[in-house]
Length: 118
Image (cartoon, rainbow, N blue to C red):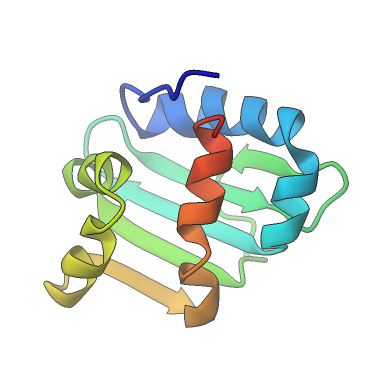
């Protein structure tokens, strides 16, 4: 399956993530976490991704149940999607904020692989 690059965060969380979760529920269960994404700027928004649910879900808004919250500007988020190593750099530059369980942030790449259909 070809890796798709979303045009923006809305495309990713409204289309690709739900499709990936539907196609790979077992991989989602391996991550086994609830994430909130807060992406500022054009094409951004807020979503809660529940990889502990059966089936895993991705819904708009912050449900308040997240174990790990990721906050980033949309341009920086797009950089993270195209370059898996960019997340650490953005974090140390203060452009990526992670609250909650930091160990779950380490599993984000695994989650994005599911969303991209990898």
